[in-house]
Image (cartoon, rainbow, N blue to C red; front, side):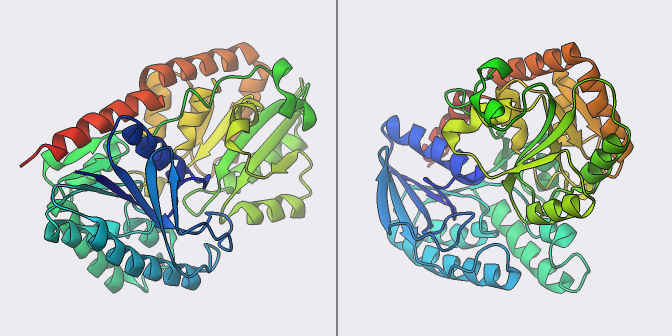
Length: 412
């Protein structure tokens, strides 16, 4: 019996889905399980990167497939990348999958459950869907189908997707609101399990400002830093952020200068940078993605972090940024639905605040309040770290995954 994972990105790629998959696959392999990962030869941020067709990482066998490499910025090209991945993956999955194996399909590219389900059944294997998001609902909300032009296509895809979720042995979702969405599709209660994403306590830890070389190198000493780290994509928005930055620059509060540190990339990252330049905003600093060994310093460089999610995407996506922020002991300001998954976690653990999307004045006020009361920010950060250690660290989630997969593998 073997575990076969399928996702477009895996080690050494730095994207969130890749890192999570790498953590789980390596943990299973090091516990003695046979683990294979089917992925592409691309890098998340650079489609021209060409990784080797096969590799081995900490006992995990890696099979990298040929695909086109148009990248994420061109929607038509991305669709072709998806199609070629589906074709390559179908053949390789058919060859590699054996009786009683457990296939774990993630959601990059979308609809992998539709591909993996029939192959798993044909080969006598079991299927677990690891749902990082729900497609086509996400595309219908923020993608090319949001104007309704592709509604018939998406309705057809949704029918296929719903059937694949109902037929799977298990569907792992990231939060309670996503679980409710999946259950509403007619999936049986015993085929839905909530296992949240995580961060690695061995990689991420709080770093004090005085010990933070990166913060010093970026010229942030003596300033109150508001961080945004990771992907700034179509599921997020920056308009609220722009309004808050503009408000605070025009009405600077007493105390240390406020700096907005944006680290990462994504579909809206360059657009956000252009808007900040067009409005002549002086307090915004842009930095590229940082290597994993620098994440503790880069995340700890901020005094408070931002997480955003468009309200219409609640139950479809759960931003994983929150878990890394909690790991380094920093509070979170969530921009989105007050009853959203992250908003609920923040309220439950008293580790930040939530402001509504579009309310730049409320965001500016929240930042001002944390800057004016550093003891409050520090306590919220401590609460976040306590929540991380008790609920969101890697070892806890890995044990949940191992127990789940063992139970599925043992089913007749």
